[in-house]
Image (cartoon, rainbow, N blue to C red):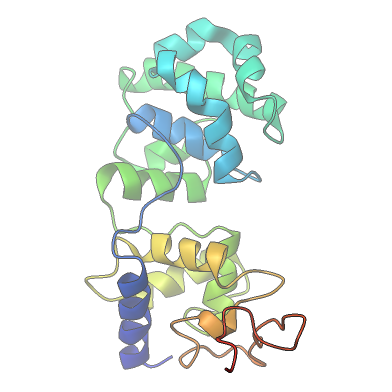
Length: 226
C-alpha cells in the first residue's frame, strides 16, 4: 500500500469502530495481564466467562498466590491449556511480588521476563495499560496485515516491525485493536466478508469473496425486487 492508502485504510477502520479496545474484561493492570496470558490459544469470550467470578475476589498478585494453583484451575478449567496457564499465572504473580512490589511494570522487557509472558502479551499490556504505541500481532493481525497488503511478513516479528514502520499518527496507539476487530468480525480466516468490508478497494486480496446467496439467489441483506 502507498502511504496515502495506509492513512485511508486506518481512517475507514476507525470510522467503523470509533473507540476500538480490547474485548477482554479486566478491572486493573494486574487482571489485564492475567487475562491476556489466559487468552493465548483461546477466545476472549471464553476467558471473560472464566474470569468473571475470579476477578471479583482475586485482583492482585498476593490474592492469586493465596488462591493457589489448584484454586485457580477450578476457575479456568474451561480454557484451553489451563494447567500450564494456571502454573504460569501463579509464577508471574510471585515474580511481581518479588521483583516489582506487586505492581505490573510499565516496561516491555520487564514484562517479557515474567513467566508465561511473551512478546505479544507484553505489547498488549503496554498498549492497553500504559498507552504505549505497540503493535501486538495475534492471528487476526497477522492475517489482516498479510492479506490486505498493509504489512506483509513471513512471521509475527516481521509483521510487527512493518506495522511500526508504516502506521502513522494518529493511528499508532489504536492500530492493533482496529486490525484485531477487523479480522475477528469481517476479514475472517475461512470466509472474509469482502462484500461489506469498508477497505475492500484498498485491499490486495484476490479474488474478493462474493456475498452469500439466499434460497432464491438473493444476497443476504439485499432488498428484494418488488
